[in-house]
Length: 191
Image 1 (spheres, rainbow, N blue to C red):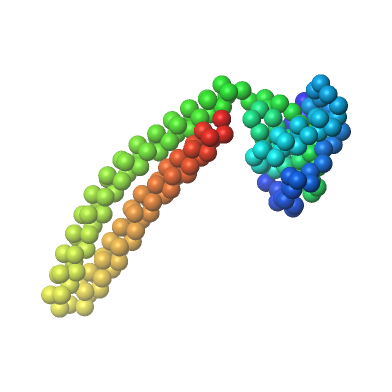
Image 2 (tube, one colour; image 1 turned 30 degrees about the vertical axis):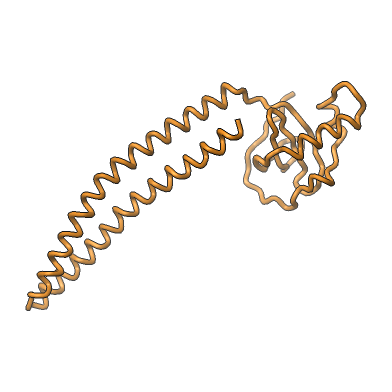
């Protein structure tokens, strides 16, 4: 009977100490191989020492627990103890992982294209706005009417806000591209 593991954000209360980790009998039974239980326990602990923390999960059988993964082995570790609850072979195949990477690569390409387009468009608009701002600043020096001066000051402030918004749009897309790039780099190292 397969148990569903639900991904949930839960605060991790204790750090797992790989030198002092215990293995539950159920985990030994799941990973049974030729040999006695102590060899299997040591094998599980050795896999755990090299495993990466993936996320905190909530399963119907174990409740909240931490999920670690090493190669194609997944280990469920108790949330508050140094206790490996169970071990199982990861079900995600290399094909699935590659498909996810391909999807992420396509999304990165979309973000990159959008960034180039927006950067080009916004850079031209920003340059035009800066020219308009400088012309207004020059004309302001020759203005005598307070109403015209107030209008010029208001327009200069509006231009500065517009430049800031356009720059922010570029920055947000650069940040999204950077996050995608970092995520893809870390995922490629995992697979």
